[in-house]
Length: 235
Image (cartoon, rainbow, N blue to C red; front, side, top):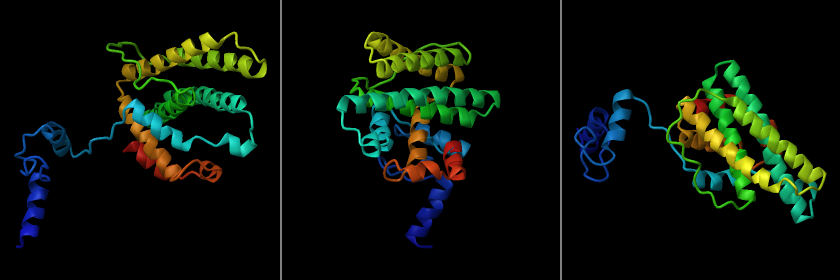
């Protein structure tokens, strides 16, 4: 056997070589050992994770270009339309999340939660929010509570209706506070379900890359490969 053949055989038996110590993973005890060991024993790949600040950057890539679509000239109107788009999207995702709960489809529920996070991230992006991380909730023993998410989304939609269509700025502070509460409730919902939100964020971006390889297109939105996207969601 050649050296390459021996190395290949050893990697099949003992895992790949560590980039730090050059030992096969069976004997490696570097920082990455615990992660590898769990994957090697369970034969399951470690799911990619993504922090919120990185997610915000990736989410902006697939925001539709309303300015070009509808020839919007006013910067204020463009900002309001983009933000209203996000609020409408959050409301629809809450309803789809409810459907996933009814049918006990955990994969679909995580998908809808990821889609909701896409709207939340782009809302922050459009507002140039300084938030780099999501709220931290250390303990949550509560069960699924869609009502809190639904109430926040409905209230935001109603206040944005008044802001855009009634030209009212009366509720601006309440909009800001309610949006912050919505983000808090999303994290709490994930904690209650014992889901890793960082994994959900990374999976959502992977799905969107499959749907829109470069950027948002109407054709990509209308012609989705649902089977391919489901494989990504199921990991």
